[in-house]
Length: 134
Image 1 (cartoon, rainbow, N blue to C red):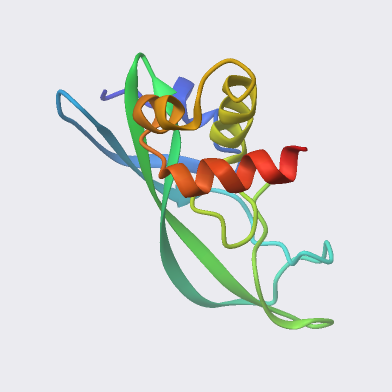
Image 2: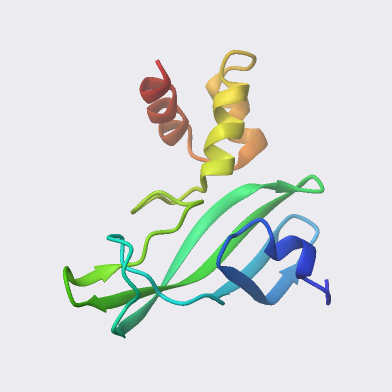
């Protein structure tokens, strides 16, 4: 996976800096490639700190995907220090919106145990998604 241009389009504002593939997992490391913005919409005055988040993504070519994302805490003149929002990831979430949507599509079709086996997401997480969906 040397050319990541197509894959980077899945994660708005980020580009892939590293990839590692095994027979059972694809690991991608993402870093921001856009100007930092506060959740209020203003351009950030400065980057306060960088943090790493590990999240699960929907399968890619039949293999589970794990993302290691460099997120930014920014300094805003209006709000103070805030974590930058990502359009494809809910705050504090450990799975992407795409994976959540995929799980929601499977819920009417398969038992929770089978969805957990297919996606690699813990069954309790799937049950919580099902509760919110109803």
